[in-house]
Image (cartoon, rainbow over the protein chains, first blue to last red):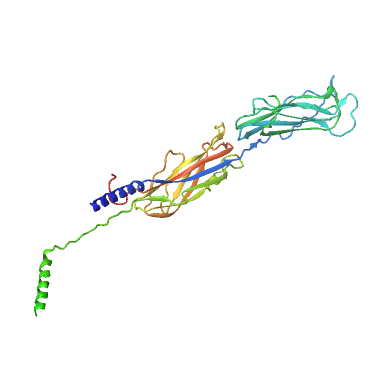
Length: 193
Length: 180
C-alpha cells in the first residue's frame, strides 16, 4: 500500500514537470532609435538680386524711385521634420551706405515688403520702415505656426518698393538684405495671428 | 557422545526447515526522464540603442540601423529543439505627414551556432523556425537590410521596435506520461 501511494505521487510529479517543460520561451530585444528634429532651407534660386538702376531716368519722376516689379526667389525642398514651426523674416531696407548728409528732398533708403509663402496658413508679411537718412532699416516678424512636419518649395516675394516721402534718391550703391529663418515657433504669438 | 548427537540432531532439524522457505527477490525499478527544455539565461532580454538614425539628407541612415546587434544567452537540451525570430518594425508615434516616413523596416537574424533564422519586419508574424538541436551558448541578434517605406524624409522623434527570439523544445524522445 505504501509503495502504491509512492507510485501515484511520483506519477503526479512527473506529469507536472512535463507540462512546464514543453513550452516555447521568448527572448526579447528592444530596439530604440531617434531622429533629431531639423529644419532645412533649400538653396535660393537667386542668392542675390540686382535691381539695377533704382531711379527714373527721365520724365516727371526723374530721380525718384522707378516702378519695381515683384521679385520672387524660390527656396525649393525646404522642410522641417517636426511640427510647431514657423518662418521668420528679417529684412533690411536698401540703403546707400556712403554716409554723406542727406539734403532736403532726398533720401538714401528704399523700403519694401517681403513675405514667404507656402509654409503655415498665415505667411509672414514684413515691411521695412527706414527713414530718409537710412536710419532703422531693419524689420523682423514671423508667420503662423505649421502644426506638422512639412516639405515644400518656399517662395520669397519682394514688393511694394517705396522711398520715404517719395523723395529723390541720392546716387550711389544701395544694399539691403533679407534673412529667412525656418525653425521652431517662438513662444510668443506670431505676427499675423 | 550424547551431546554430540543432540547437537547433530538440532542441526539436522534446522537444515531440514530451510528448504521449506521460498527465496524472495524484490525489485525496484527506477525510471526517470529529462524533459525537453529551452531557457534563456540571465541575458534573456536586451536592448539595442541605435541613437540617431537619420542622415544629413534627412532620410534614413541605413548604416546606423544595420549596425544594431545584441547577444542573448540560452540553451536547449533536446535534439528536436528549434529557434525562430520575429522582427517588429521601428515605429514613431507621430501621425504620418505627407512627404515623410515614420517607420523603419529591417531584417532580424538570430544566430545560434549553425542555426540562423531570419524574419523581415515587413512580413506579419515570425519567420520560419530553424532546427537548433542541443545548444548552449550565445544567440547573436543582428539587424540588416533596413529601409523606410518610401525613402522619404524621416519624421523627428523616438522610434521603438523589438525582436523576439523563440526557443522551442519540441519532443526529442518517445511519448511521455500523460497528464493526469
